[in-house]
Structures are given as C-alpha cells and as structure tokens.
Amino acid sequence: MNVARSWLRALAVTVTIASNVLAQVASAVTGNYGPRPQGLGWAIVFVAVAFVYVVCAIIAWKAVRSPVPGWLMIGAALLWSAGAWYPLARGIGWLWPPVAGVTDLWAIFVGALVLCYPTGRFSRTDRILLLAGSGAILVRFIGTLLFSSPSGSECGCVQNVYAVLPNDDADFWLGVAWRAVGLALMITIAVRLAVRWFTSSLPARRVSFVMPLAIVLWCYGTVQDSLSFTLGWDGGWLQFIPPFAIALIPPAFVGGVFYARGLRSRVADLVIVARDKVDRALWESSLARTLHDPSLRVYWWDEQQRAFLTSDGEHVPDDGDRDRRGRSTLAIDSDQGPIALIEHDIALSQDDRLLDAVSSALLLSVDNDRLRGRLERTIQELRESRLRIVEEGYLARRRLERDLHDGSQQQLVSLAISLRIATAKAEAAGNTEVAGDLERASAQLADALKELRELARGIHPTVLTDGDLGSALEELGQRSHLPVEVRVDTTDRFANVIEETIYYSVSECLANAAKHAGARNCAVLVTRRDDNVSVVVKDDGAGGARFEPGGGLEGIRDRVEAVNGRAELRSVTGLGTILELTIPVPTSAAPDDGKRSE
Image (cartoon, rainbow, N blue to C red; front, side, top):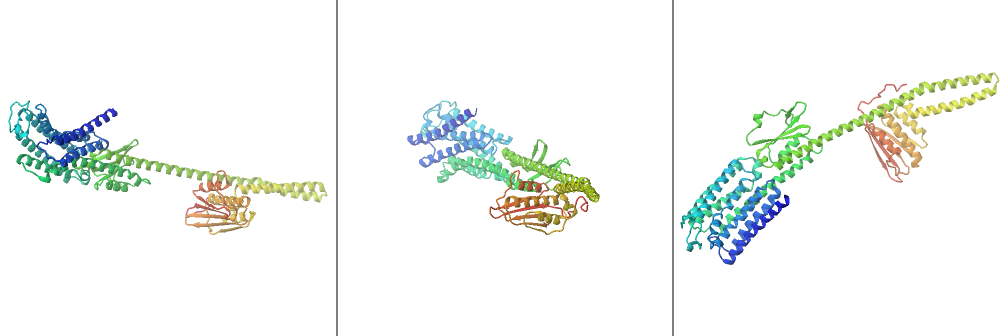
C-alpha cells in the first residue's frame, strides 16, 4: 500500500512538472502564447510557480497528517499549465474547448488549499464556498462547450465542435461572469480569513501568520486580471504580482505547519523543565509560554478530593465559566486514572499532533515524578530498614555483652576468688602439690577471663557504656601499636548506634594503618558541625588505599551509610591516607537507651 502510494505520488509529480515545462517549451518554439504574456522571464515565472507547488506538495505529504493539502497543491500545479496549453490546442476543434473550460480550475484547488489550512480538513462553511466555486467553474466549462465560438481572426481558433448555440461573445461574457464570481468568492474567503485572524487569539494568529498576506495579494491579482480581461488594461510590471501571490500560498501553508511542528519540539523540552519534580505552577507557565497562549490553564486531578484543582490548589471554576467561546479543553488520563485538564485556545486544537505532544510530555513528566517518588520512598524505606537492622544488631550485642558481663564473667570471677581461697588453704595445710595445681588453674582461669573480656569488648565496647566517646577513642589510641593523637572537639553524646559506628570505624582505620599502610603516626579528629558529626582519621603510611569489595574500608563505608552517613577517602601513594566520615545526628542528640552508667 505504501509503495503504491509512493509510486502514485511520484507519477503525479512527474506529470505535473513535465506538463508545465513542455507547455512553456512548446509555446517558445511555436511562438504561440495566445493572450498570455510572452518572453523568457514570464516562462520562468510560470514554471517557477508550478515548481513551488510541487515542492511544497512533497513537503506537505511528509509533514501534514492528511494527504489532502499535498494533492491540492499537485492539482493546482497541473491545472496551472492548462493556460499555456490552451493557445497550442486552438487548432484542434475537439480539444481546445475543454482546455479553455479548465484554464482557471487551478483557482478552485488553491482556494481549497487556503480553506483547509492548516489541518487539511474543511468546515461546513468551507464546503459551501467550495461548492459555490465548483459550481461557477462548472457553469463556465459547460458554457464554453455549448456556446463559445470566437471568430478565428480573433483567437485563431477552429470551430467548436461541441457548440450547440455558437456565439462570438460567449467566451468574453463567460470570462467576465467567472471572474466576477471568482472575485466575490476570493473576497469572501479573504474576509473570512481576515476576520478569523484578527478576532482570534495569539496562538491562532501565530499559526496562520503568512497566509493573510498571500490572500490579500491574490485578491489584488484577481482584481488586476479581471480589469485586464474586461478593459484590456496593461498592468506592466504589476502583472508579476498575481503569480507571486499564487506562489506564496503553499509556502505559507507549509510554513504554518512547520511552525506548529516547532511548537511540538518545544513542548518536548517541558520534560526537561520537570525532570526533578512536577512543579505545577512552573509546568503551567512553561506550557503557556511554549504555546504562546497566556490564557492557558492546567487543572490537576486530586485523588483525595476526587476533583480537579488549579496549580494553586484551588477548586476549578464552574463549567459555565470554563466553557468559554474560543476555548477548548484537553483531558489527559493514564491507566491509573485522570491526571489533568488543559484549557487552551481553540486554535491549538487544529493541530492534533501538537496536543498529542502536550499529552505525552505531561504524561511522561507525571510518570517520571511518580517513579521518582516511588524510588525515593523505596530508598527511604531501605535506609530505615538498614538502620533498624543496625540498631537491632547493636541491641543484640549490648544484650550479649551484658549477659557475658553479668553471667559468665561474674561466675568466672567468683571461681577465681574460690581458687585463690583454695590455694591459700592448701598452702596453709602444707600441701604444696595441690597449691601448685590450684595456682596453675588460677592462671588458666585468668587467661580465659581476659579472653572473655576481650571478646565482650569486641562485641560491644564497654568503655562507651561506662564513659563517653572521647574516652573510648583515647583507649583505642592507647591500645594501638602506633602513636595516635586523638582530639574530640565536642562533649555531646550521640545515639548509641552512632557512637558505636564511630568507635568501630576508627578501630578499623587504626588497625589498617598499623598492619597494611606501614604508618608511623596517626591522628583522629572528631568535630560537631550543626546536624552532623565529622570524624577524620589520618595516617602517614604508604597510601594508595581504596574502597574494595570485601575490604575493611568498604566495611567502614557500609557501616557509615547504614546510619545515613557518607565516607570520603583521599589516599595518594606515598602521601598517606585520609578518611573522613560525616554522619547526620539530631540537633538534640542524646543517648537512646538510658543505661550508660551501668
């Protein structure tokens, strides 16, 4: 189907161009121009008009949804050549009358092209005007066949074989009548278009910004041609105005279409305007500015109130106020229900693709906003879930540390005391062998108790419970194999999970500096900055450290991000490593379990 349509259009274009070019060539070769202007310049002008129509037809077929405008342009260009063929056909009695009858039929096609601008569709009034023009041209065609019989000396014509009532003056009066009717129709179309243009809104005037000029010039050309035909008036160089006006109409049509297409491309930019969030007031003002319709309004569907609201959250005016003359409403819906109503100038309704672009842009923006909101909620839920897991882990370790401290550790301490008492009794009884066994058991118990305390400290640092963050970090520095400078510039207490995160992160950094970096010195700085606590750990080791999956630094970053913080690493080979942790804390941060004094 598409191939056949393409071949048909190609054939129509070829025939149209060939008809116009061959007619001018034949006229130049035979020198037979009839009543038409003569000369190479006029031949070029006539062919140029046809070429303009053909080129614009090809563009219209690609740019306009309806194929009608393109075929109207081809029809006008093809019949444009009839005026050049008529003088060449005057020697053939059966040919020249039909050709003479259709020499002005191109004007009907041009008028139809003007009336269907820019959508390719006709209103009821447009159809009436077309029927009137078609009726007038039909009357002229039939009158030419039945009555036209000019003298051979006057037009060089042979006898009209179709003439029923031959009349020498029939051709003249038919021409006068046709021009009178044509001029009346042209003035009607021009007035109709002018009134529509001047009374319409800014969008309507912008869409049809060239066509009024072409119509005015065409009206002038029709008046000039009528005067020249009736009075024999020679317009001189003014005779170039009619073909210029006629040639201006298809570019005006195509220009308006491409202007509307430019609006569609600008509508697509609205997605960029709303890429972060659908700001309703911004979307409305941007759309109004893009479509050059300052009266445009967007009413948004509110799911809770089950009604449309303005961008300011107010209820939509009553339907009687909204359905104003010259206004139209575009409803935008999705699979999930209504989204918005766009009230716009009715002139914009002439371009379906423009409104489709508006709908698509708004749908894309809203869907993007919905997906972004859903993603943000999912991320927030994930953060809260991860934080709950971390907090539950903290509480579990805290309970385990307490169980070890209050249960197994206390029992071992009691056992150690009992062993010391038993050793003293054995020595007092002079049983040195038993006393030695008891001392060795006491030593093993002391080692086991030390290991248990280290294990408990690894599960949960008791120093955080008995002291504060500063003392806990000081103890880490003292236990490190490197000289560590610790400075805590805040006395605030933070949530247990945050202090524990800082403690274990610093512990891992000091261990990495000693084991892997070959550092000689380390420094730890803790500061409070508004709603954040900053922890900076520096060393003068080998550098070149980076976050790697499964590595200690990656574990630190995961631990910090679990409490909504971030970790930044700066490590240059040979220049040491700096790890900065930034963790958000509430303004009134406080311990969250109330049992630090235990």
